[in-house]
Length: 133
Image 1 (cartoon, rainbow, N blue to C red):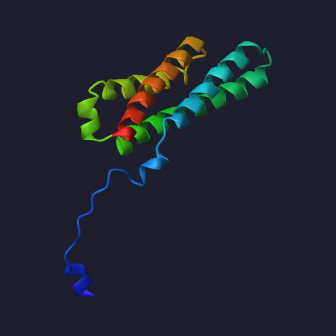
Image 2: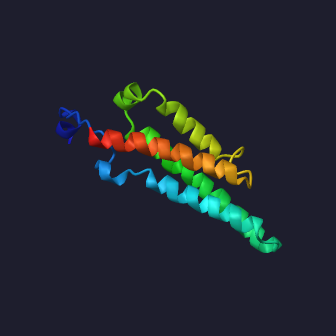
Image 3: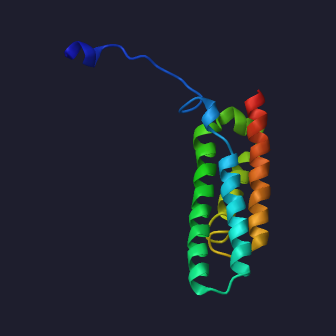
């Protein structure tokens, strides 16, 4: 028993938690597209119950966008990516704020949803460039 406790350790290094194929900004984009569609449906519906349910779902989807972006930022992107793409920190920050309380989570503004989708597209472009490398 003591032998295993004092046994030398092996240092392991990996780029990702799992093989890189599990990361994809499309997850954030799908949720953001859902947010935009919900905003349109709420604008066209006067039913208070429907609107309440739709807004709750929109808020949940906004949280999922933030989650998927943070997973990319914390688990996939590494220092060499941030060196090559110095705007990446700002892009992720701006995108998560657009999905937050002052963005799609807290408002019914289709323009905010469009801004969010544009930021996700910029992040996705960088993501796919890193996958080619």
